[in-house]
Length: 124
Image (cartoon, rainbow, N blue to C red; front, side):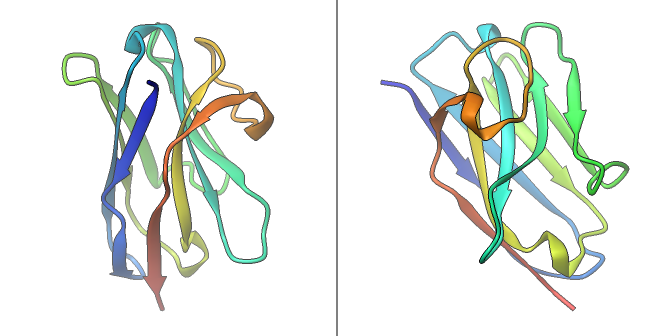
């Protein structure tokens, strides 16, 4: 079965850092892009970042460029999201997800498997 296990969320003060991890299983890691999405209370789910495990191309939403870094360990089959200079508006449940193919779309409708979310809370 395809599973994506996200971890690393927590409570942090504004300006702080967190690193999220996503450990997918049940499929060939190198064949798919893995994305991070987030959903804040009362808002729609939005794409944050994505990495293609075939060519390691990456995508970042404008709101996180320069602050977040996505990376992939193809030996450990794990995707990381390093989040620095966190802001209160980054508060959300963060989900890792498998894109339907090898390229990043960062469109929720193109995700075929979602992991359970991990809560990130940034206090001001």
